[in-house]
Image (cartoon, rainbow, N blue to C red; front, side, top):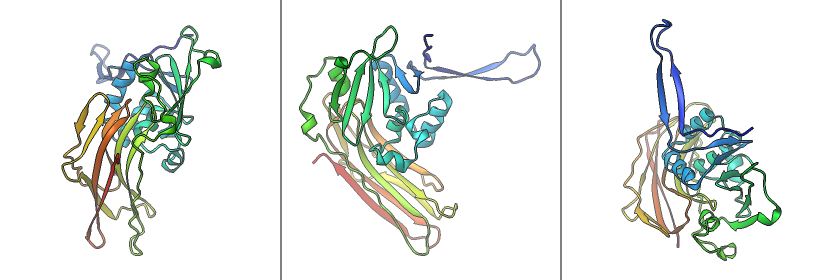
Length: 291
């Protein structure tokens, strides 16, 4: 049986009264892109739908991405694996983890894509439009996570030799504050995530809980004014950005998320944490770039 696409609209019905004569009030959340859950992976019928999904989901926080996955009933990698398990597979951005299943799979247009971030490869298998089955092995293609995979599949870019080349290396840095009198640690990271069909810049700060109680107030902000990104089509400035002060949670800032890789970027973030025990305000700056 053919599965029905979500037409980008989730209907949530709220009954305001038990009186049958009073109408029901319906709230609509419009996503403006089509998708379905095909077996155990997200299925976007066109690249345009996928790009619209990136534009919408890329603005969401970690908590909001979890809520979205649960709302649409998708068991994403973010839901099924812990953060340490995801990072062991080379998945650092929560947005990417929301779009793929635990096997690293997603369908965009006529191709099922399988990401192996550790090996830095993306496997693309073309499907039969009539029954959604994978065609012969001859239709399978292998790409690097450095490739603009969707552009190549659409014939808008020639296949590259990037399997032998790093194209703006990814970088992940963890920052731990560990004091004998303070059992909780602060983790911070800045990363350029590459996946062939998704490339993103993300920064994140969070507290590692041991006692269950927060000892820190935290926030993050862009450092300086020379923060930017450039891909093959366009470019943009990053920030200025400063988060609210928070505790007992995590905060992330994702200024770039696109199906196209970056040609150049500079991304510098200040992480701030203040202990409720000694009131000392601590600062750490992490910068990554394409050099």
